[in-house]
Image 1: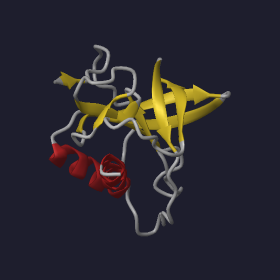
Image 2 (image 1 turned 135 degrees about the horizontal axis):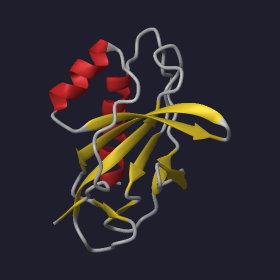
Image 3 (image 1 turned 90 degrees about the vertical axis):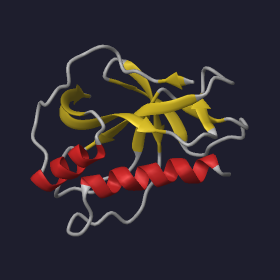
Image 4 (image 1 turned 180 degrees about the vertical axis):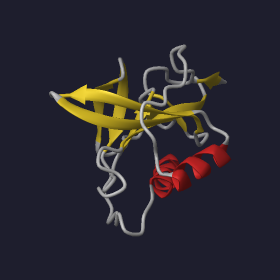
Length: 148
């Protein structure tokens, strides 16, 4: 099985997340990093969570038939905790093993790699929802797509 590995680099912590989110991310045991980027001349903040386990019915889009067990999830967190979060960005780009299409996907250049933007929206409420909760929600999106 193929375990996706991000390009060799040190874990970057270029900005701080709320303490509660840090504790929950740490409890997962997955490597994560915070990165500041410039997009269209604007500063943007990103969280990357590496080695996220994938459901068995999901594989790398560009390597059909090769089982893929992990991927990197990216989240644009500019404005968080006061701003809404939506979408997830995945590297490598994913597909169902069955090759039936997954809706609302597009490629997105991010951090020197091609990520796959999953356009998913829900009523995120900054007063009650968290970044860690959004991460868990994105994991359920993967699970739901894997069984369709």
